[in-house]
Image (cartoon, rainbow, N blue to C red; front, top):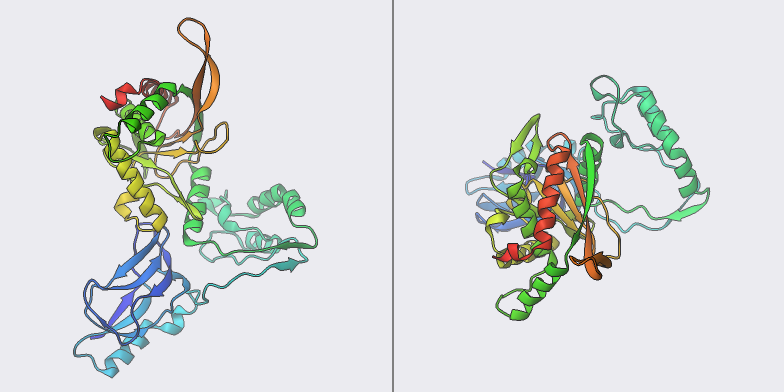
Length: 410
């Protein structure tokens, strides 16, 4: 019997994907393990391998289609003894006409510059959002996105007051940012950008963040990094971020109270020390994980970070390479800023924000002022699972490792 090939779920959080390209044409033979398509998921562009053997009889969803739901029929594969009638039945069963109501079959287009004469556009209100009819009507009239609102009505339902509050807050901005005659370009958001926006909005609204900051003298850390690299004994160049990752892992091991996440009403405490490292990619961010970082040497950590960063930028990370960990390190040390605070990467319990090393005057042990390289570390914490005292003790241990870097290499 002909097989209906469905849009696969390529990550636990994937609900829709963009069908970037077909690697096989209709009529081509397919073997098990052949790459037949590339899918742009909520995490990366991934190759889809066939688990069937046969002939690609019919492509149901063309390349370039956006927002194809998981398990939606995308192709029909003919097997050895299938007849043309079997193929027709399979295509009919796939209900292409029904899919057209669910899938954005328009291909990616170049967006041109547009002149508008109204301050906002009407927004389609998805049926799945819990909102009163009046709230939906007001949101549609004023161009307010209901997906960005947390409802205060029964069972989280969005009511009129919720929308009016948003309207009041944004009315000034809308008048300022969108003059009567203005030019702008609306670009379609990528799957990755949509997921980042959705996850971080949800996290910022629902997770009770609290923040701490601390400074660390990394003069000795920069010296020991230079000594390691100048020795020529390693196959890779050690970065400051490699040393920071090791320091975070050791501090986390010493302060297990912060090696936790909130997991569906329970506190999950980890026995392993797994540290995620933020990697900036086009239109988003990935957080590949260094597993058991406390047990690995600086050279191993450095190679893993470089390898995972490369895969992140190529869109080739596998789910088990970026899903996990209790903490993320976000390092903007290459930019001329003073410091910053990040939004927690859910479901993790905290995130560290590393600023640049700046020359500053400090007192030495003899009460003399000397120049030193000082970094500022911002720490955002999920108060549901981590208390302020435990967070402070973790930062103290982290600073101790950063200011005594010999502890990282012995």
